[in-house]
Image (cartoon, rainbow, N blue to C red):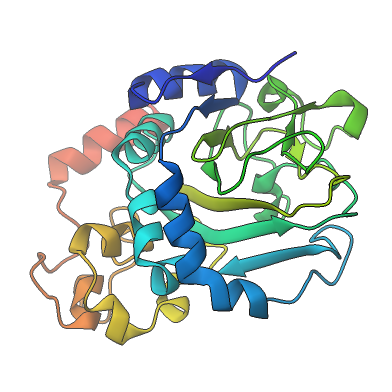
Length: 291
């Protein structure tokens, strides 16, 4: 049992195909080391100020620094990386759209025990999503090399097809080792957990995750990113952050206005959505079947 690796020139379809089979895949050195160093430098004061976790799950020797869109210009490029968005769009194409779920640097310090093995999609109140219906497509970018000794993410390839709440232990997993600038893609349904850090270094990873746009975000982007910063961001990034309709009638503001108008960027159509009556009928038939 191993985690498959793909080269940096792989397409989103290539990555999504392995995700469908294994639930997890690593793309080697999709970002260069200088990019990861810039993100580290931009976030330096925030990383230093972040307290360690309050419990065993978050990690008592682990720091989780969020708000990356607001705090790091360079990290925005990871959020919007074309290979990532193509992969996410292909993996979650059964939904109308997807949005940014969370952004954080996970810094696993020395002597941190392994995190309990879990599924990220349990964050949605442990709702039992139908088998094969994925609601998350996630990434962790290596800001430092990930090794088994320093706490590389541990995963169980293929476990996205297992029953929910199945109890796995650390011995059931493999370490997703990768070099700096590489990125691991994994589904919200894959069983995984942060590894134990038995080294004398801190393992740093940039965790950026995406979810279907009809589910609530783990990190509230509207409050995490101040509006004065949001107004200066590209519209495509704002839409991924959630300034868009989540489906036909989800997410508009007051009198059916587009969410971008909350920032004074009202260039989108007014109304529930952009579907005709025929579009709605066809979509309903496709998802629900004939009456």
